[in-house]
Length: 209
Image: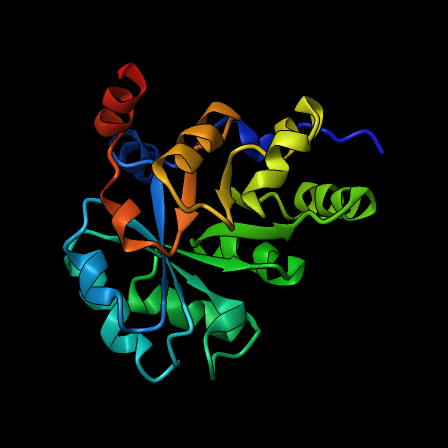
């Protein structure tokens, strides 16, 4: 399969480009325990996961008032349906975007005014081809590529087809973030609160040492 450069890959939403210009890290906020860590961190973009649907009306607006850009992982929010109604619910709460592995949900998100992030797991060549096909059909605003170490093994052509992408999974250090950026990611996603404070200035200083 010859991956094609998708139309949506030509630009990144202004909110995201401005955020990543300062802190090139997406905070993966899994459950409620680290919400306070994210509220006080310089990172301003997050993926909410494992937050029960009953708590989303409290959490999403609170993060929005704090100036955070919130994506909700539709696949891993207990009690949240996997349909258009769920996406309308998130939009009404003030979520900026949604994350899913499901092509049907990604396709429904954009017409509702949500930013879309399509998660793909690349485990082998055949899986990569399926991911490339799904992304070319879903035309998401962002692709979350997992696991991050696989990006170094992918061809330049495949990476262009998945651009703009966020590298996620096994992002455990500043060096991991720097490598992801060097390989073309617009940001790296991690659940480690220490990395939610990692600014581009700090990365540049570390590279000079």
